[in-house]
Image (cartoon, rainbow, N blue to C red; front, side):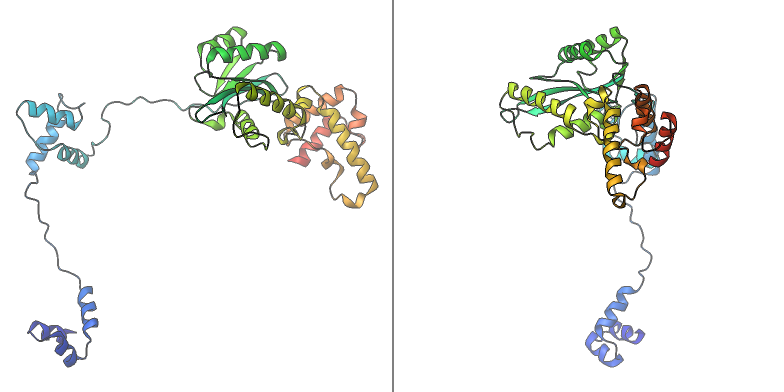
Length: 357
């Protein structure tokens, strides 16, 4: 390769040099390209500010007069005084080199908001509500559905449909619901304008109800309402549009009735919200256990699980204990626990908890 380079440097053509040295021109070209280039001398731009000039610009930007001003404001102010130091972009580059390109004013610090916890061990204690849009008869026309549900039973205690969203309408809905189902301990909602409106806040304060709100822009903090809206809008019977406000109200009334009394909710042990809300869940569980016991007795080979798995219920110890206590209070212990003779309500709840954990 060295001979090839010397020949080409002496003026011999690359073809002749390749023939004389036995090195192909392609190989010689590749090897020459891989040769490390020599050190490059950095060429400083002619318009670059000197070190002294850059220090002067930084000194002006950090002066008492301009320390709180952005470079554009400083640039304009100096030009009005007949002073030109550099362009706005150069000011930013100088500040960046000094690690000062950031908000230089003191920023407000907001403490982290706590995640709301909605805990209930019985119906009528914690309500959650929200508003969703229902498509109207034409594009851009929507109706507002106000829906409030009981967190413990998932029972829809109220569903109103209006042509607009407002705090007074929400207040009217709550008064009606509280008059029928009683005043809860806690009412949870997101931070929409109606949820934080003065009429709603004043009503809840007068009734001694604790207000709970989701964190800003966190829909997961109101999961019960959001999940119900998905159940509503993904239902096969949900229409593409409602012909009128009356149609929307009629549909919501029918859907809520079917949901409350016919929808077996996985979050409450495949019971209907109405059964849990009105205390019928223990009786329904008794009927299910009896049916499973009869089937097991008829065809034991078809069941690979123990009798305890015949209970259909949510995997939460609080709900199991509550249901067991209600069954015992109703004096149906022997009927409910007949699959596990000799266990009282407390022992049965413990056995269920160990099986479901």
